[in-house]
Length: 543
Image 1 (cartoon, rainbow, N blue to C red):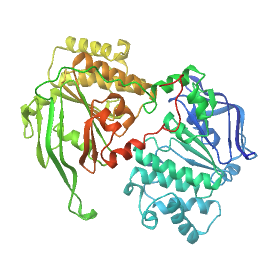
Image 2: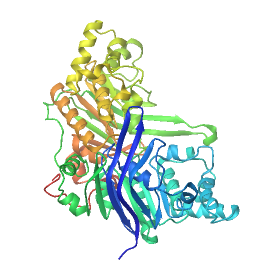
Image 3: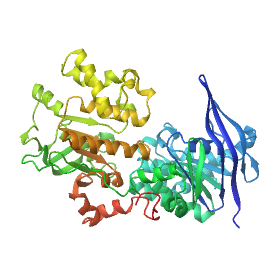
Image 4: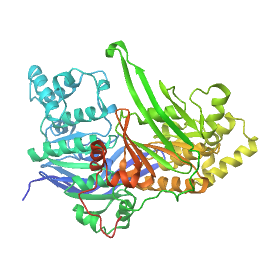
């Protein structure tokens, strides 16, 4: 029988706020054994991250453990003193937080941040700590660890920074690792590399892993057991085959039906009659950026000879990893950046060198929905002002007519009109993204560029937004240029797909053909990295 590392029993956590007490975790019980990976899944607000924070006693100041116990290898975590906790954190339990950008000190070299763990716990002196830090970075899978140790966080990619967090968490060789959404912001191939390496490191050492994730595909592939949380409670737990193959709780079935990597039915709009002239066509687009002297000078070719056609009423997905050139291509197509060479045609008219009033008129026909709805909406504005802002900018309609248009657009995106006077901070992520879509539709555009429009959302909200986009396309005849690194989402919504690697299109065609029979090894690699392939979803979930 495996050694029991963690036992959480009847845990209840509440947040004290000015408006009263909010109960975030209610009567939660779970355990993790040596060498076992337990995934806690659920949407935002389900209590999974609060549970993880309670395990390492890193709850927010307003949070209080009202009831229950947390036993970590015989240590009472709930009632431990701060001195006792310092002997637990790092040695017995390590933490990999979600966002390396805010978790790493921007003004301290990488090696120093890893070495600090070893020095604090008396596992090495200053000289040996620096050497051990390099080895920890090597074990975490970083190339040239001696070089990385001398660099600062901003000099590393997102995947590299995540590996640094893993190196810090495992530097003191803890018995339990708490990984809170460790790969949610990464491309699928980098995600797979990180999870593969994490699995290799922990399995070899017999380390237990408490994995917090909203991605059921990741949980299906990586966990020995899955714990499903909803509204602060555990609603179901068991092996992946039990939970995903035969889910007993309605909430679990809803999550399965919404998960892009496990979802069966496509949600694309019904086909429209082909148009002789495409809404958008780009021909041999190239974009070079001049590198600073500090980086060695020269030029970086971000987009290299890219060509594609987007017919009316269709969705073309541009997919690829970070740095593949997909967002730069979209900016060139929208005329938000000047190409080095090549041309952009809208409705058959070359607009590559359009400027001034003509370019302003072109803006009305092409709109954008960005990845992060909170960052793209002015927090000072009401929803009504956000939606009517494009109408004001172009002088469309009277004040009364613009207000009526805002109310009409809320109906279109299925939001109640009571939202009009609220501000973005008062809305959920899914509601904010619906407001962003309403704003993009205000000027009745022909083309909407969707730049990672659902990557920051929970799976059930993702499904709602994707269904809404398909409905709007069918009703309004919209054309979508869909930018994404998530091929599971692309498989759901796109008619055609173009795969970019290092600025070049390596493969393009109908989604069914490209996904079923990829011709390029890079496309095959992207497809194989989609999580969720290890478990067969049963009748209770998607099929």
